Image (cartoon, rainbow, N blue to C red; front, side, top):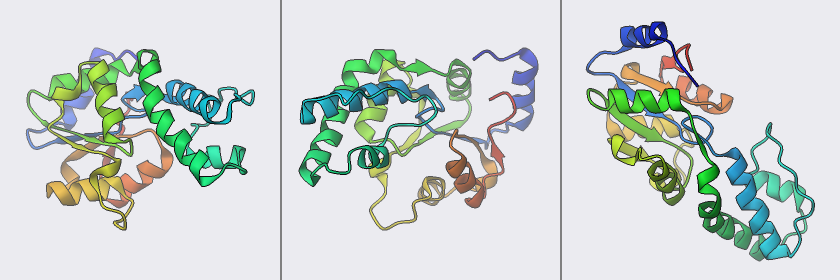
Length: 198
């Protein structure tokens, strides 16, 4: 994704030295949907000994809920093995992930002057490998992963990150692709979400 000089100027208008950037990972900073699907497909084949003629749907991310819907007869043990192997097989396809260059440029550019935070529902090991694949890991000052918060806390990842960091949500510019998570960002008091060029 390319951005024009005008768009960079527009972003600069929003930035102060106190601005904090929150970035989601999957389908925001990095396109991982296809790789996620390939990892699940290989895991399903490994556990069930069949690929079940699975085909990629670019409009719906393959996740645990989809796995349960598509394979309601899986035992708990099979389900857990598929999830475990899916994480393992992700590395086999990581080179097929695609970087959102416009957002990566923002991460790199503003890491020199502002706080950059990863706020994702992705597991830490996979998130770190994905960012390392694009040499982006070291640009983040803080990172919040699926494991960052104990079970039982509010599922709003933005609210949890804000509470942990102790920052004013009015200082945050957030980048997120999922509608439910955008609503969560708004509920957490974040006013600037996905400036127009994104």
